[in-house]
Image (cartoon, rainbow over all chains, first blue to last red; front, side, top):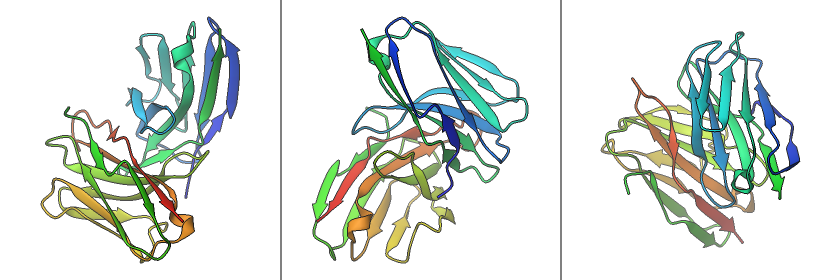
Length: 110
Length: 114
């Protein structure tokens, strides 16, 4: 199945550091969503973006909807141990289905 | 709890058996999605419904797979004659179609075919 390109594939950082990850697509999307998934659980929605150029924050998380509508970025500031998990981007197509990225695995060390 | 509910959480079955999973979406969400996720991959789209109508099916959904949403509320996903390659996490999500259209996921059903 189709998946978006997400980078980096994994990150190992120290507690307190900032994190950046991005997602790119060859297709245009109307909505970008960012999810976090813990082992054995379903993805949990973090941030939703609806307009090109939009910048949205949720606590220590900030995400942007790229101007070209083909990419999105997620930043996490001042990481803490509970940020550990896999982060997925997802784009909503014009037929309203979600296409997911390949995921970024985040590990935070104290 | 008013989130998306999936049952069972885990299912172990022998190859060749049929299995059925259930998803109860968030109340009043008219859109319902099924995804499959294998280890180390992102969720892959299988199919989705608007109310009781099945709008789109992925090529991943072979003839052995069938999904229904008869009354526009809960949905079932059935896999017939299971194969080892069907082992995966099956995720359900729901959303509105207008206004706040974010999709919320259930905890998933992990299928193991032995």
